[in-house]
Image 1 (tube, rainbow, N blue to C red):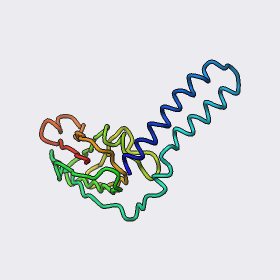
Image 2: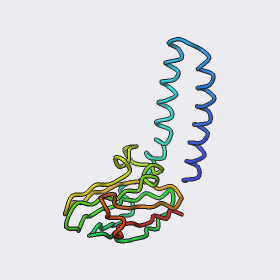
Image 3: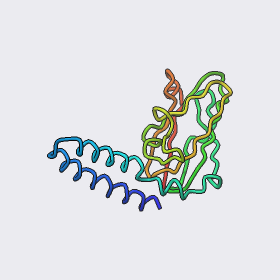
Image 4: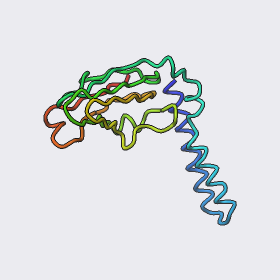
Length: 159
């Protein structure tokens, strides 16, 4: 499923690039309308995949943020499968889970992932992120001052 989604997105982007090149040669309001339609198409390219996903059946993965550690340190996920990542901050202060590449490449029920590619949690807070990951190896860390240096880092492996 992930491979098919990638191929569809690649085809849409390739088609869009060719269309934009042609539109740039034609000045006027028609160009603006065509460009707007093209941008809408690009924004909704993965809507069928999101709509067809049974998000209620998404596998829950618990991720605990504690003082200078993530548990689990390494997450193993399957590409194209829906997950609900449940983040809990069990530390004595604020922490975050930053994995910009991972979050940027994933698909979401709303179409939008975590702001800035990170989940920010105050002491004792929790948050859920539902997504469909894309194959790859991704680094995760807490971006608070010195937290990753003290061991608050991990890896996400999606196969």
